[in-house]
Amino acid sequence: MATAVHSNFVSDLYSHHHSWLVSLLRRKLGNIDNADDLAQDTFTRILTARDTASIREPRAYLTTVATRLMAQYFRRLALERAYLDALAALPEETSPSPETRMLVVEALTAVSRVLDGLSPRVRDIFLLSQLDGLSYAEIGAQFDMSVNAVQKSMIRAFQHCYAAVYAT
Image 1 (cartoon, rainbow, N blue to C red):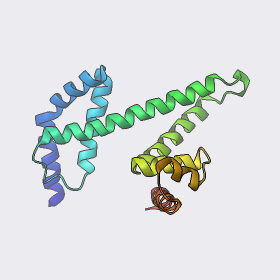
Image 2 (spheres, rainbow, N blue to C red):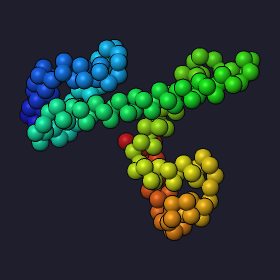
Image 3 (cartoon, one colour):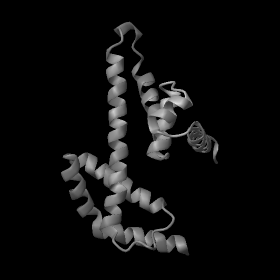
Image 4 (cartoon, one colour):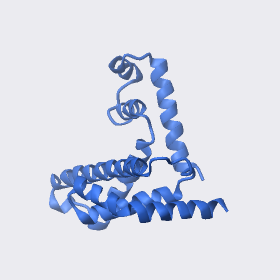
């Protein structure tokens, strides 16, 4: 029964606010196709959300969800652009196939999505450790934290990554 009520709520939300959301996104993105895609993703996200009964301001809620999806979209584009720029620097004979490029972009997007689930500080600490190879003491000095606090942040990051990969 709750599922039917939720579906009706999302249906009403869609019929009353879809065109408004597409207009908003078109102004922000400058492209009607991307605006349509992002609006659809917004409503799909709401459809799969658990608690929508407490929404008092539908447009504010839609704006928040769409803004988060737009941020993910732009991060993915930046990631893809950085990867393609790195590939452009390679000699042509060592350049991966289009299929391999697509797989790498998908993998980078998945990693980015997992890292987005971390708080900014924990994500920065994790990346400094794992990508830049900084020691916990160096990271602690950079963030004015104890080594113990850096270790706790790393534990949170590893637990989050483990759950993202192995949770069912």
